[in-house]
Length: 218
Image (cartoon, helix red, strand yellow):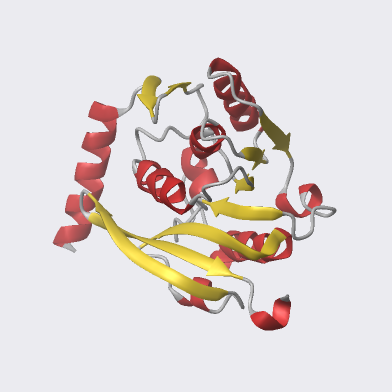
């Protein structure tokens, strides 16, 4: 209980002190619009993008970011020469991602849609699928509704299901979840867990996973 209280207090205090509307990262400049999740508040996003960059192919590849938010990962990978499709259902987030790509001279295709509709005709074409999903377990306030994992992790499970449909047979799905996210939500996805590691941000650990289609799914 003490640890949970400390986590809440420190996270809120740290967010107030560190949140910035303009910042630089991975050689790019970002501006975060009002109403869009800010990675300087939820710094796990930087852990995720660092991991994505380390897993990116050395050759130019097709990459999909599901739930792109402000476009942090999409822009960073596009600047490395990859062809990136950035997907978000929020009009505000998609607009912010598009503007950040333009700000840095990146060619990122930004799509505003839910996952199922946008990916219906894109089967097995992506070398990497990146998912920084909503993973709050309890139903949040209106401000945090985009961070909720849904009933029994429904939104996370839907994301993994959609990713499994569009990733190439030899491609990778790169995923981040909180230490509080039930592991069965990931491990029982039907995908093959090829690599997993933990990284810490302040008082919380995060799982960074690499999944692939199984032999029977290819």
